[in-house]
Image (tube, rainbow, N blue to C red; front, side, top):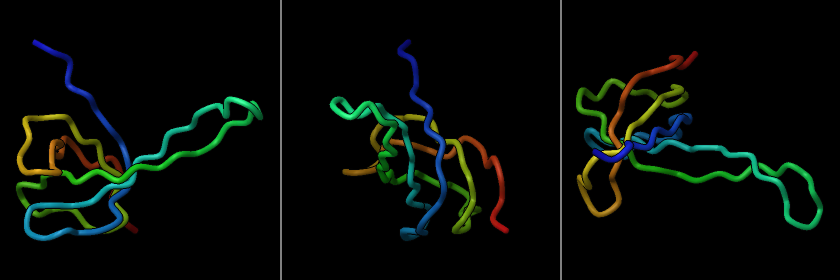
Length: 82
């Protein structure tokens, strides 16, 4: 069995029924300037129980493609929105 990728990020948008958009930040070294740069990517994740709110910090796990753009499902909520 292959290893399932896990991503952690913040919910930035509730994108319809059972779907949320999360923003994942990663820090990479710039090839020329050797400075740590923050890069962001947005992922659509599947939220079966519609429990997420904007501002939640969540962990999502890779799964089979659920739609054209959705290949992650909610694993857990790390920290709720204020």
